[in-house]
Length: 247
Figure 1 (cartoon, rainbow, N blue to C red):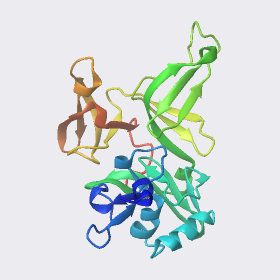
Figure 2 (figure 1 turned 90 degrees about the vertical axis):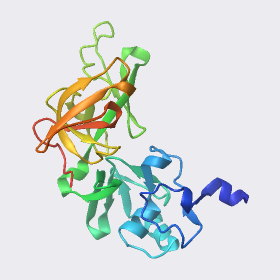
Figure 3 (figure 1 turned 90 degrees about the horizontal axis):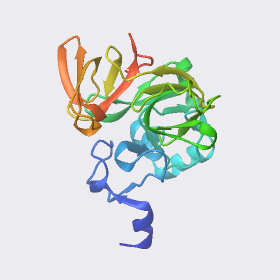
Figure 4 (figure 1 turned 120 degrees about the vertical axis):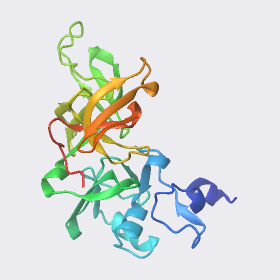
């Protein structure tokens, strides 16, 4: 393997199966740049613009579009055509008046769901873990590789820290301020983000299992009845109704 292919290339047969690229027509696929999402759960902008939206026919054309500043991700201009976009990210192509959110849909781990103009100003983020930082403030580490700082007035009595791991917060874009909080609790709506029930939405009815999240089972309920999914596959998306367009 050449130095170029080892550092920047990805053979198509090794790319995630849900990427919409033909495996046998070409050898190489673009490897996503290091970024907020893992290879398995992201897709580079090049494939989004060329193979999904059909806004270009070649990688060279995509590079021109992206490097011209025409593409925003979560309200920020991205000029890296291999930038990885993932779950809940908002993609906007201003010149084409196109705004999408990446969500699971059908049998696709991630799909481009058109959203109204007003929804491009926020996204939902799941709290993967949290820690206390200097000054007693709380840092929430989110599923998209970013973090949000919750400032507390009294470190000995941090009443501002109402957030738990796997809760979801609604944050504004692009300034990333917390505007809403959706706890992981019975009665709230949740989206299944992986597994055989991918894309289904239901109310959290029950959480079963031991103290380790990896072995817990969540029972969701929708119009077709109850179904069980793994705890790690659940993403809260609202209370009585979804807080965003799900497609």
